[in-house]
Length: 311
Image 1: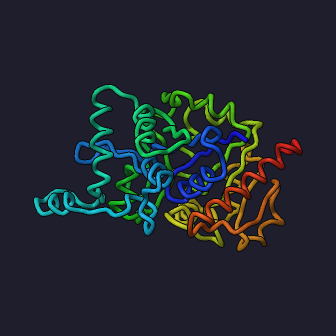
Image 2: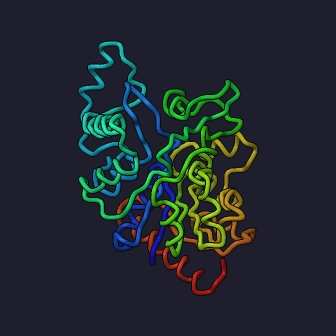
Image 3: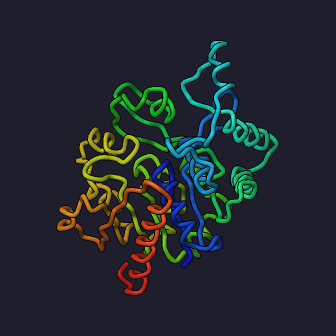
């Protein structure tokens, strides 16, 4: 079965790794959020792209889920000693990725082409696409004013109270080359357990993506378990927007698009309210075996919906 997965962040990267274990490389395309991208020390940083690629390549830091395993911090420590900003953690191994990406972008290469070459160098078999080669920065609207995503997320540690989001330049952005074709060819689309507001919504706001998913088998996996986000500020964002953070709220977020929903066993009590086909399973991914197990549940669920025509 050909699958396209929309992903961002650590939770998305974990499920993508599970899907890569369960599917042949030719059958999986991963579309990654680039709304988190920003320039730091003159370098183009793509946090979600790198998190997904490092996970697929087996290079990710197993403790944090982001960054490189076996990382060192010599450059950052020396920069801080000289008075440079050290609020965003750039490890020495990770720095090589940003240096080469920035060099190639300056030479006129597209982000999608650079990503494909990096994946080849790291031994990643499936196709990984940024949502767009055009910049679409996520702007976080807060009670203190608008903040760039990384300023809100890392520098301010998600402390300012949010009032909404906007995706700058989204209306004029073009999907990355091959993205709409991959969605058209996919027999199932998976919305990974990523933050709906700032990981999945930026992708859905790229012109053509939402329309490409309508009427398709679209399975969403909840990143909220028992009212809490497994990782990151998703639950806090829901509360500050006046929405109770639950798996049911995540399902409602994707209404009109989603044909099936996967939620954790701790949220079984919410199933009585579900107006969509659903599957209850253990969605925590502590290791690669858990990632594969969840991926297999998602794929089996998708295959069943395809067979029944219930989408």
